[in-house]
Length: 271
Ligand code: KIV
Image (cartoon, rainbow, N blue to C red):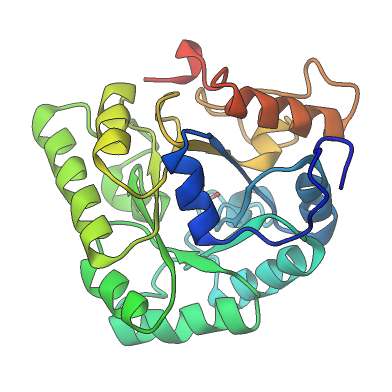
């Protein structure tokens, strides 16, 4: 039990708990974390999910993209995070080029789960082959559509995706295919709110938005952006929760409450 919850439990959340939250209309809160100290604090506040994102390449390692991040890096940081939390569901990213084939995806996902302690792995793009193979091996998968940071050199910049009708229809079709292949969650990054709303209402799996509007089933932010301690400019879809907080714990609590009460993201953080 902690100061923010009235339920005395330290049971770790499962994918079925998250699916049940969508069913009953409870918003899912998620933040990234890369180390034990932040993992424990985020968990104490009651955030539902922690994403060990390959954004660590930018916010921890100081690279300009996520591309240099390795499976070894991800496994190490996933271990740090998973060992320090009690309740939060932990997802770890499969980094760039670690899922070029379904076999490679399974071998690397095994490291993130067996050594890193992750409960689910996330991969970018409509990689239906990898998703169905992983799911067949008993590995829970989170899809990621919209802005795909690992494809930044193809996309030509960190831009909103799915603005044109054909692009929006492709993202919608990919989302259905990922669910059909067995993905248990979907992250939608930087897409118009109206598209994210359609996807969230059509899919039965929880859809977690980042720059995708308030109608997603949950929200994720990069921790260092919302604490305003990043080394690069905070993206428009994020918010500095430290601005009105006395300390980091208060800022994380304010974010958690804002997500639960559908007060974040506001229109100014959406497209
Ligand atoms: O790596 C990451 O932090 C992510 C989020 C931006 C969703 O994938």
